[in-house]
Image 1: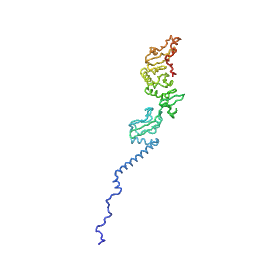
Image 2: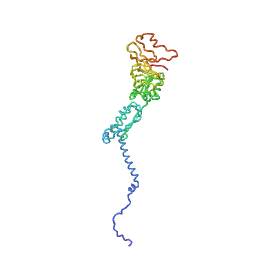
Image 3: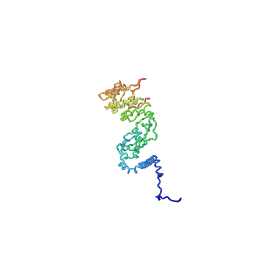
Image 4: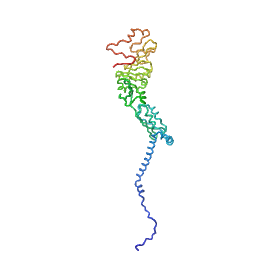
Length: 347
């Protein structure tokens, strides 16, 4: 009786209602599993992007794929951000970049654009980046010269403090930088160049006519124009003098007239020295005070301040008249204006 088996028949293995351990783990850590899957997906994308960047670094290897990317990913450039540009002209920079807004973002080579920008005169080094989906970022580091200083026959790039810009010579793109920068000449010109350069920047019309600025007595400047004329600037008043000169150029085209020198050292007047008359008599032009538009009917500039007038044809060879035109300076009196060649040596 004790060993009696139950009457129920055998129905196979016993079914378990408990789920598997993996299923339980997934149920318990459902949120963590989702985060893990997202992380793995982003990791795969990062690996693909890194491979694409490594491939794009080589122009020869990436060139065959660029057309396909432009075809399948026609993202257009909407924004070009430029950082660090001060001296480099914007047109030159955009030309070196090789693309513009509206063009496919994969339609240009980043490495080739960087090399072209590095070759610009004022650029020390540059980086070009694509920021998907529609932005190109250009970061440039410029050298900081503001002028070229001619000192004892040597041409030196200088910064605002008058110091030499290091490791710069006349070779390659540095020679192009020399052409665009103002030229300052003379002892102490490097230390005083920053204020003159600022005045040129505020008056670009005058700057176009100036080929050199000569420091006189370490106190003031003489400007040499393209036609050889000299402009004598007052001490410490370069900005105001160049502003007046720009106004006269706009009203009377003064810088385009045949003059020998323009003396602006006095704040309330301007003296213009004209070249000798073309009739062969040796008659010099009269000095002008006031507006440069006050001219006589014969084309010579009128004198309105009591300056000695030009001699007529009959008096040109009169020794007495020549002596009156060049009187000896009185003792203790004011010193006369320098000669028309502008080579003043006053201290």
